[in-house]
Length: 89
Image 1: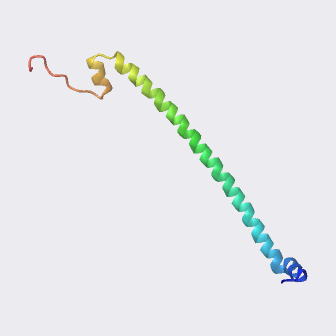
Image 2 (image 1 turned 90 degrees about the horizontal axis):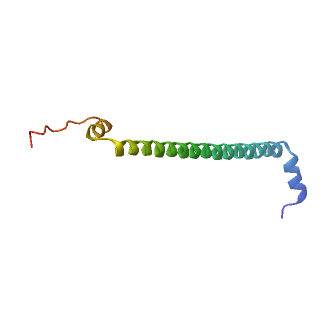
Image 3 (image 1 turned 90 degrees about the vertical axis):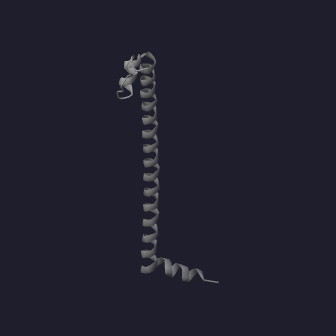
């Protein structure tokens, strides 16, 4: 079994102090990284939810326009199309 005196010698030596600084710094960096990662994920999720609402609103607007449009209006909504001449049928 390791004696308490040996543990104290290692902890209070220069090597022990350097190891404690490295472990402490690693813990701080890990906490900062975790916090930043969670904040970034929340930000992206919020942005995606906002974009989804915008798309649904825009989709609803297009549906209302399409329901109220005549043949020429529908062609304009679709990007333009040629209507057949009535004499060709």
